[in-house]
Length: 222
Image (tube, rainbow, N blue to C red; front, side):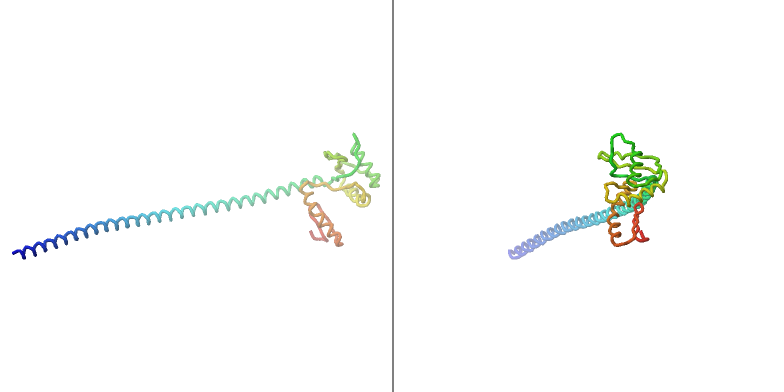
């Protein structure tokens, strides 16, 4: 009897242990399911987040491309406007140069107080250039320089008179402190100054050289 009792108790104990293990396994399974669900939810969230990031990047890329296109169009317009402005400036310089076409600048002529510029210039032409031609001027005046003697700018009535006087300078003023030059707008004069060394070098080489406004011709080619 005791033996049977002990066997029953042992079986009951084993069953109890087995039940406890089953309960423990069920708990582990529940935890595992919960963890798996969390992982799945996190994965779904990351997928959604990834898709949203992809959409945001795509949208930003599109915006950047639109901005690039707009910038390109603006640059194109500016380039066109710049070219138009450049052409207008060149046209203005051409008009200014034409308005000065009959002018010559006389530098180095002695200046006296309250003198008449036109009389001084006529005297200079007669004595220094040895020209008895009855040259006429539309306007003669000093440049508003602070230094003395101030250059004199003269607008000739006849262009042929201007050319006769200009060409006389090469013969009669060489080696003196007096000079005669054509008048041009400052921008044109700056361009000419850059060409002077090239002109001198070409002249030393024996080439035929002409400087016309801001174009240098060596031989017959600009």
